[in-house]
Length: 69
Image (tube, rainbow, N blue to C red; front, side):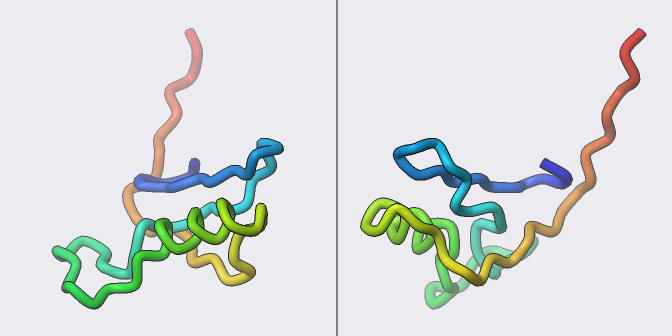
């Protein structure tokens, strides 16, 4: 993950099929008609074993990694 929240979805063979955002709501509460991108992607993976071609990256706080002592 590069930022939070960053969602990953795998198929039955543990191959990465989705990496992206939850939905288009961003920081605001999601309106009732917002596209549920993660849900739709994982439904597609469950049905076909493949994720969607179009995947929109997450936008959020970057992850700061602490150096090992």
